[in-house]
Figure 1 (cartoon, rainbow, N blue to C red):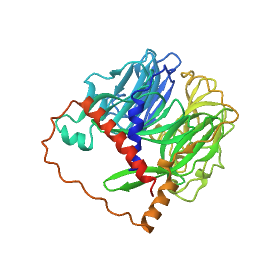
Figure 2: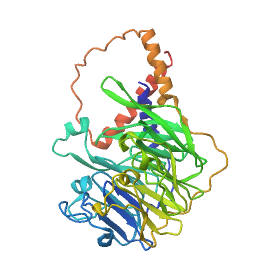
Figure 3: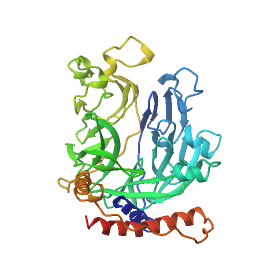
Figure 4: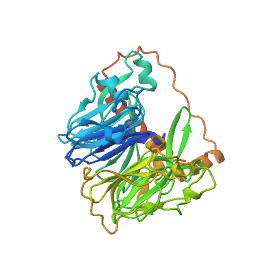
Length: 441
């Protein structure tokens, strides 16, 4: 019952006032072997494999940087997922191509999706946008009960699910007061639960020292990794979180596997991290270049890669890096260098500048010297969940009487909006009852 308390949050969020958000600038993105960059004039370039349809037919050979396609002329934000990519232009219009965007919105690429968008997050089966008024909208493929109810309409159009949001990442959102929320929408029903407080930003990630974590940023710019575990209760599954562990200070930019600190240092971790650099060259002492274990089994923790960096993003075989002078470089992946062959798929074996002036990622924030550390809330705590499991095994909970089956005729089906409001309202009541019951154990 504890996880149902999140419905109460959703009911409240949909009634909160909104405020205008500053547009977010993201000049680089990648997914697999497809790469995107926005230059200083706003041109959005795409090259590599045509997995999203952005660089030509899917069966064509990869495009090299010199032959990159120009998708937009006035872009300020680009994001890439497994089946889709998207961009936001300087007017706030969101454009998408490939995957679920096409099946939902039309035939022409890129597709114009929403207006007044601050940032966008792309999932495997859905997309989520944070608009400049602080509202979160989601669209994509139905799932679960919603798909069963609408077998002939497998995709849903944009629906507002949250309000009063400051940052967005997948199925997680950071509210203006620093509360971290996890939410879901199957096409009809909204679920939401609070996870943490004192959070500035978040990234989801699986694979830090062979574990599953989320990365959260503290209010002072520090970066923390938080262990996550999926647990089941009957047919339902949800995540609980361990204690946050800080590993970097004053981070101005970060992805699931890279971070740039306020001094311009680029840090990275995991098997796909870029090679360490020394005086502009690959450092021969890089542990991944000399490791006896396969790259998939080798992890040497957080590594400093280079200095003078403004932003970076990892790809499968390289890292795109925007330096503080605005130039765009591609850096070889460390694991690729152990068996690199000359001109193999144009994979770089040394740092290479490919653009003189990329779009600047924006003014870094001024982080305070001190701020409260990110904190996992009791409803999402792994330690509390484990203690409850131990108590449940030691003290069996008596069965409660079951209600008699209803003989009343079923009510007629209401509209989707009314159904969503009814679900949230009733779930809020259930959450309160569940919380009171949990206090007895």
